[in-house]
Length: 118
Image 1 (cartoon, rainbow, N blue to C red):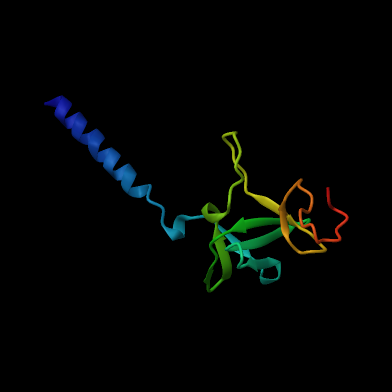
Image 2: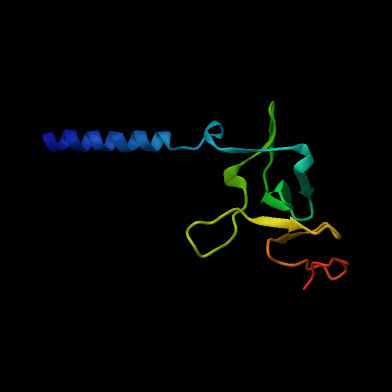
């Protein structure tokens, strides 16, 4: 009888813990976006958020509420890496052709007069 009570208690605790682990928009971390630091690339279905020093984060989802524009942190693209701690995909914008490239990679536009080429 005691085993049944313990099992029922553990089962109910498991059910309640799963119930509260569901993500809702009010519980998600938001990254607020300044209108001046935001660019749209409709050709690649991406939004770029400037975070300083010509570093841009990439997202596919932008929302608006009474506080302004924001993106959920879970929607920011992560860079593909083999390690367990993946960081946000960061890009830089070429000052000549205005295309975005991964940090550490030079401008790959063959028609660009950039001094930041291979």
